[in-house]
Length: 284
Ligand SMILES: Cc1cc2nc3c(=O)[nH]c(=O)nc-3n(C[C@H](O)[C@H](O)[C@H](O)COP(=O)(O)OP(=O)(O)OC[C@H]3O[C@@H](n4cnc5c(N)ncnc54)[C@H](O)[C@@H]3O)c2cc1C
Image 1 (cartoon, protein in one colour):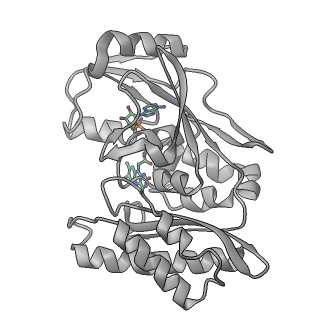
Image 2 (image 1 turned 120 degrees about the vertical axis):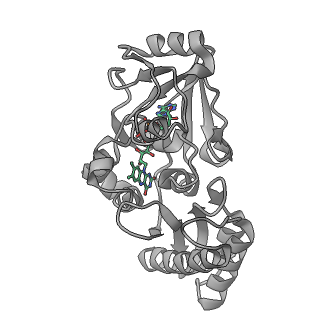
């Protein structure tokens, strides 16, 4: 399908972006890789009279790793994440998750900023960022502010970012311990039927902290404190694993769609989470 007519802008800096957003309000939208927005415009599910391409805005394409954490510019692509040897060493869960997003063509274009800003419950990065306790830096006419990933998602396509603000960067504390990103999808290139991000720290044979989030099982990503708490102080044996999975299943709220009925999704969520916890524990 062909999208409705729109004005195309390609500003050279963030001031230019912000002034167009200011002028046109919610008639304007930024575009990063365009691999979520353009399909929605073609399907006439998004009406964007003023489209602002971010590709010429500098300072949003770097990955920095320091002792304080990892900073990923909003225009870093999924392919950049996969290819970055420093990230593979310091936060391998990012690479494991990025490799399960879509297909190589989409990953060359789709950005981290677009993936987390979009608010699509099917996107993999939001749940992952909640598991990793990331925060998002947002800039607008009133300056910059940081929002924790765990507070960012309000409903499907509704986030704490205002229409006139741009997400510039994701910051992640250096992950510790074992990790796993596990995803069930119908075929290569599909969004998750269920996906789980798990990070576990082990000390003296038992679990000292666990962080767990799931994707596409509610209208927002689901970070379950109860699921993580169920593992702490245990040896992540079968009993603890069952309690953690049950806690997460209490927190999700899937709906029926072409990926299956609710009961099926709950079943798949349980299997995927069980696998993810077991794998993260084996790596801890
Ligand atoms: C066939 C196909 C399969 C896919 N499968 C998956 C999948 O399995 N898992 C998955 O996670 N994703 C999947 N995607 C989505 C893909 O990863 C997207 O590219 C990504 O989610 C959005 O990134 P983008 O840079 O393309 O964003 P865009 O399409 O450019 O933008 C998406 C939305 O975010 C907003 N936005 C973009 N950047 C910013 C910013 N810096 N600040 C504020 N708002 C911003 C835009 O205004 C728009 O509303 C798939 C896409 C396709 C086409």
